[in-house]
Length: 380
Image (tube, rainbow, N blue to C red; front, side, top):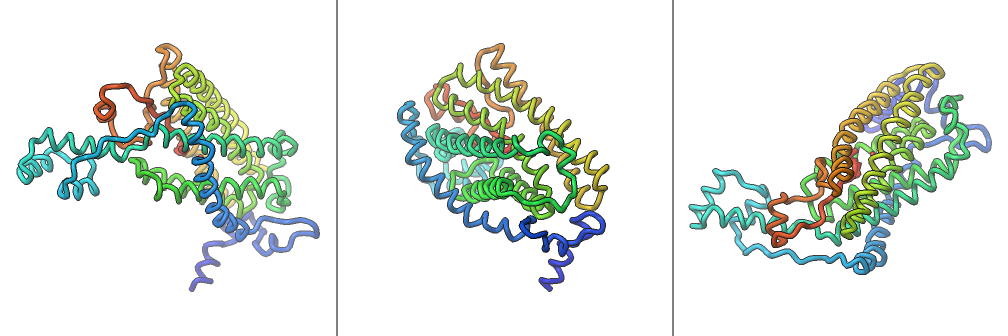
């Protein structure tokens, strides 16, 4: 049954162009390697190594940097122990009016006292500026490193400058060590991000980012499997470029270098526009959509990948609208406001102010999603 499912799932007619089969890719010419699905399995043990490396990096590098910059860990006020409220909190962090009235009668507490308990309890789970600084410094280091590595490989690759070569003799294109290392590193990083969600402080965007990381892993895996590596490495490189400046802006924000934060965020906005609204659609998507049609012709997986790339472009437009609003505020009002896409804090502005005694704390600049699509995400 397993073999029949595998044969159905990895159907030649779906994943590969007409008159090409997986058997053809299993027997490359002497001295040539084609991608194999099993190769990406090495990313799983490597992701564990990446996760452990992150813990060491945050403890030995990021945390000392935070101390130098006087970014405090902060000890949030502890909520008064209460089994009834704690049980409800585990399922719902912000009870509605009906639940508040019921709890008021059950505990003989004033409604405002119960609301205050939930505010304090939410702030108790909120990551400290030092924690967020360490996480951002790790992501900044990874994005910068992988971007430099990708540029070194892509700069000397002829298909970077002539994207029609992405489809020359496709899918019979040799796998280079640079492509393999780039793919496995990105894949291991996103596996590690997904694992770390279950060990880090749980945030309100938990399920959104979980879906984002899974989607990214699936896209990287499948594009590797059917040898879309040339276009795939271009897509990953373009997305990593803007994330470097976003994480740098967040680092400046947590360190309370507001003017540097504003400047970096404006640079991020410009980089985001150039890479994701100019290079990505008019250089990469055009190649995958138009040039591949002319050279290879459409097939079933071709429709799937192009559909996903176009959905991603739609998200880029939405994200840039939100980013531009923040950048304009930074330029004309002199301070980066809280990102409308905020996905890192589980407490509202009111809760933050209450927990900090009315002071204005560092406000979070969120990734793609990048994600979201991140990055938070994330955002790829």
